[in-house]
Length: 251
Image (cartoon, rainbow, N blue to C red; front, side):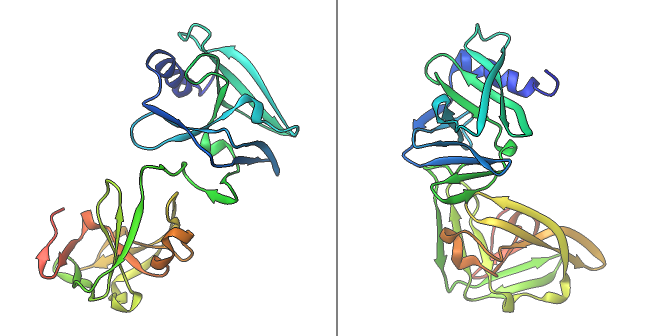
C-alpha cells in the first residue's frame, strides 16, 4: 500500500513488542467524518505507541451505521495479528487504519488522528492528539519580575506574569499585552494547535533589522482549562534571554 510504510512499521512493532502502555478510559470518544459520527464509544483505550503521548484506539463494535469499516490485507510480519483497514462514511474514506486481532489490543482500531475531521472527548473537541491523563497544566499568578530581551533589546517586562507549568516541559511565562514593546513585533500567519491550550497565533520579532520568525505566541480563545492565558503573550524561552527577578534563566 502506497504511503502505508509508517503504519506497517507501527503494526509490526506493536504486534511483536506491544504498546509502551495502554489504559481503558471512561471518556466518551467520538469521531466526526464527512459530517457524520463514524464511531461513538465509552470503551476506548489510551494507547501509548511511544512514551510521549497517547492515541485513542476504539473498539470494532463502536462504529456507527453511517460508517463502514473493512479489513483489507494482513500486515506483513505480524502473523495475521494486525490488518490494514478502510473506514468510509459516504463519499469519504481513509485507509490510514489498523485493526488488531490479538491481545492486548484485540478488536481495537487505530485511525490516524489527522484523518478524522474532529475528535471529541465527551462533548469537548480535541486537537493534535488526545490529552495524556498523567499530565497536567497549572497556571499560576506571580509577582516575580520577568524580563525578556533579545540581542540586547528589551522586548517585554512584567511584574504580574502568569507562570504556565506543564508536566515535563519548560515553564512558560505569559505576559500581559501592556508589558510588551510592540514596536518590535509584527504579525505572523502561523497557527498551531495544542491539545491542552487550543489554537495559537504568532508574532515575528524584528531587532536591529533582523527578523526572528514566530518568536511569540498567544491564544485568543484558549481551552477552558487554560482560560487565564487568553490574550497574554509568551516568548520562546529557548530563543530569547529571560530573567526572573534579575537572574537569567538557563536555556
